[in-house]
Structure formats: structure tokens, C-alpha cells
Image (cartoon, rainbow, N blue to C red; front, top):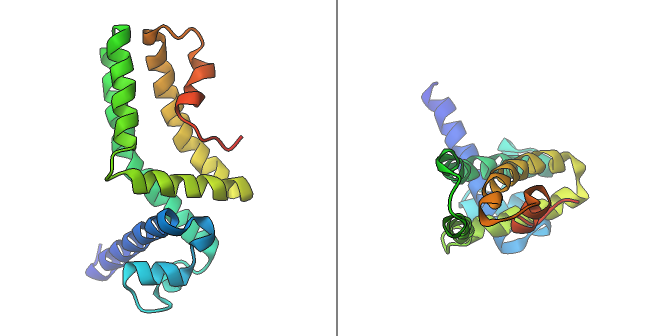
Length: 166
């Protein structure tokens, strides 16, 4: 990859990160090219040079969110081969996961994720991609819940991992 290509990838990533911060601060309706330019500290029109439409900008934010969520998914998945756990330990693991999602340094991502979920309710093209991320969490949660005595993990894991696009 040439230096120019690497710079373009870095710029696209920084714009997507700024889009997530705008989603956090202003919600889906506040996500505009201008708002992202301001948040990223870029000259007006820069964001639209990389993401020409609002849909492209939303897609970039969603893709970036998916990348940022992967370490959490992998950490949760890494625990699963060591189970089954005692009910108390499983409850602790589920609580640790929820606490990590709600940690002060990750709250912005949670708010941005919610903004994307709300956009997905209005725009079905985003629903499938967000549902894929959610499905990964659901499957891992379903594998942990029986260890705490849950007899219907498929039914109860969505309650742990709300919101849903349903």
C-alpha cells in the first residue's frame, strides 16, 4: 500500500470515528457531513469527498463500529471453551461483560450503537449489518446462560442484549 493509500485509509477511519462521536452527541438526525467535518477538525466538504452520501457515511460508521466491537466479541468468545461454569461464575462473567460495555470509556460507543439501531429501524439496508453484530453477541450469551440455570437461553439472551430492530 502506498503512502497516499495509507493516508486515505487513515482519513476514512478518522472520519468514521468522528461520525460515531457525532452519533453519540447528536443522534442519527445530527449526523451530517458538516457535523462530521467539524468533529474531525477537517475543512468543510472533506467528509463528502470520502463519503459522498449520508448513506455512505452511515455505512462507514457501522463498519467502524463493527471493527471496534470485535475485541469485545473475541474476549467473550475466549471464555466459552472453559465452561461450563458454576452459576455464580457465569453470572459474574455476564456482569463483567455488561460492565465493560457500560464503562465510561465505552459509553460513547453504546450511545452511537443505539443511534445506529434507531437509523436501522428507519432504513432496512442497515438492519442486516447491525443484526449480524447482534447475532454474534446473542450466540455467545446463549452459551453462557444455561450455566446460571436459564432453561430458555434462546428466549432470554435478547433481554440481556437489548435493543433489537424487531
